[in-house]
Image 1 (cartoon, rainbow, N blue to C red):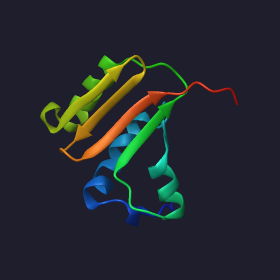
Image 2 (image 1 turned 180 degrees about the vertical axis):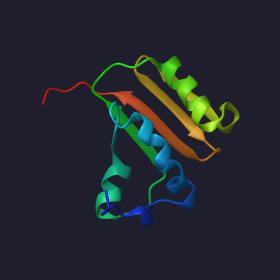
Image 3 (image 1 turned 90 degrees about the vertical axis):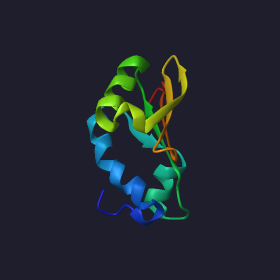
Length: 102
């Protein structure tokens, strides 16, 4: 984690990273932001978290409300094993299940 290219994130995005530790055993960061943090090739605007296991979106919404305050984010998508929010009217965060065989 020491070699991450945090310069690809805005200050607002850097501030919320520690909050995601709560889900480190259930979700992993993937997509463009995950790659950009490793190679620093572009700025990043969203966080896409994936899990190999099903999750309860209502429980996640409650956890996010506790973590960030329910008035600080807007839920933009809720489906089975999929939850997307916008935090502080600018930071897109998605949680999804991607079941794959390793």
